[in-house]
Length: 623
Image 1 (cartoon, one colour):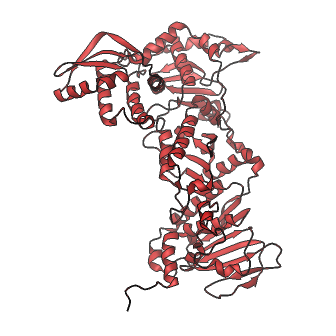
Image 2 (cartoon, helix red, strand yellow; image 1 turned 90 degrees about the horizontal axis):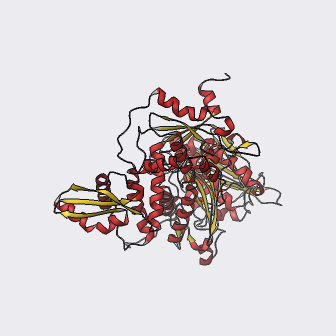
Image 3 (cartoon, helix red, strand yellow; image 1 turned 30 degrees about the vertical axis):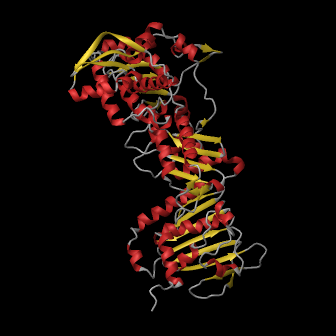
């Protein structure tokens, strides 16, 4: 007896099924992809018992001819590719020709299909008959999969509960509906309709697509979303990214499509995570719905059994493109966030800002003209005063005096210079009070704005440090009284080795004794910071980030930014330091002009808006 034997076809198909069909959602995925490739305009999916008892997928596509039905169940038989050239430029969802053959080896499958201009359809159930039979059916195809894993009980034992398995199907169908908005989709479970979505007219996609997104992901996502539409070097990125403030604990709202294909790719995820790095809390996940279109010849979709991953010919270019466009979208700051917050989700569109176009800004010159120069200088001093002793909590008299600066002015003057009879109100409004030395309360056109003064100042300082470092314009200012401190001898050696790096980052120091370090100058932005604390923090950061100056600039940027972020903490307004009203207004204007001002360096929000409607609801006005 020979040691090597050919496997029987049934066993080959079951082995293939082990790769293609992991759970009921895998069957739905394969059948829906076939329906999309058939040119369907509407796809209806019905499941019973989370798909283990029955899965039915019906479409109104081109249908199959009688002679094609038996071939549909043959292994590696497909109408989508004919040569290697076709495989290298495949644009269809499916192409391997193994889905129905694999599924039919572990379930009872039947197919009924009818082509246009034919009097009736044809039905075939391979487990019952090898020949198609005439059947009444509209144009299109219906595939029914019953008794999944009926002949492989060991596989069935690995399935989760019905609730978990159906959740996978529901999530998959929502992803399909977002990846292919021009198609209509419906999902029914146990006879109950979960959703039914009509096709989105391509000519009206800008107006209609937000409605589909809101229906599938919820109005909260849409209200906090920013629109992206960018094209460069053969790459087209479109979709929505949510503000960092909307970040979630899970990755359930991370949807990315490549040429209409649902993918979960590590390279793509890494690029998007990098773009959010400066504004996202480390324990949270970004939310997005993004579609990347590119030449099929430069992406390989045949690298994973379930086609869930892709490989790009120029992965670096794709990664850089995604990072750059998303990073730029997030940098729009307060204006974009205000545009998202004040959209109208009831109409199915939140008017998200379209990235790539100039956003309207408040008249900065007019705003600054209202701020006395002394207030501006006072605020700049506060940015650098990291160790100034905290003042006691404000008294009622102090709060009253701060608020009276606004309340004593006429309404028109309170909110800005009138132009053509209309008051010009900046997005974050004007300060009213500084609550317990922590939160700035400001009034804008919508209602109340609450600002974390320290978090906001930290972001402003951080962005200024990044700009100065990138332009090699880190202005250094000598300390009136140099500061020296003790370290271990080993630490002193490390300080001495990093003197040049410290100087590049705005801290001029030297080793003056075996265990003594002296700081003689600091970056102007941090000139009033605690020099010892700043030097020690910078020393720790450099050790952790392991910066090597001979590395390429893109590789070097992230560790440098991490170091600058820590430095910015030493140059920000501290809690319990009472700001005057003009100083608070300067901070608000700086926020409006600063990229990524919606979050501090650690991903915490810097401000929140409470509309008059929110406040009325809180106090039950009109109820």
